[in-house]
Length: 210
Image (cartoon, rainbow, N blue to C red; front, side, top):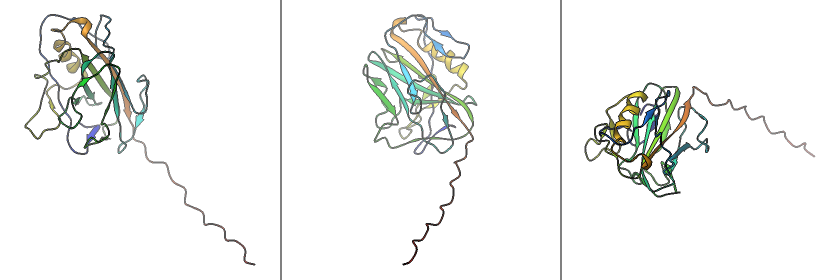
């Protein structure tokens, strides 16, 4: 991924397939929305904004950690869309702890403690969107994301841009019951921020001799 760079790999992936069932809507911000109230209630947030309602700033080289939770046992799919429209599938992945089944009322972190990678911020600068899609049953995203070979830790995504992602996911959820899936978003801003200058240490005054 362009903004979330893996120290040990490259992110990527997405998929779409399905007919009939739920009738999701697309918001003006290209976010897939379930028009029916449901108990799944997925949440997603960053380590600098536990509310998930703001857009905290990160500078290149800094690390970011993402969190998600659900109110019912669900399969959670996490995507990142950078300012240039590059889409990366964060979850599921093939690393330790990369399974996407979440128990109700538990919080999962990415990366979690012990994972063999970190998410390091990099350019391009601008607003990033993290989309969480949760479903009581597994979703078929094979036409959007694929794992290339056994050595690939993260899948490759075949759609680009938040519009295509939202449209593809709206097709994915149509075969499932409306009250069994939910979506949520979080944002973070990559800024060109230089480290604060550190003032030179002044020499320590000497004690007068006696």
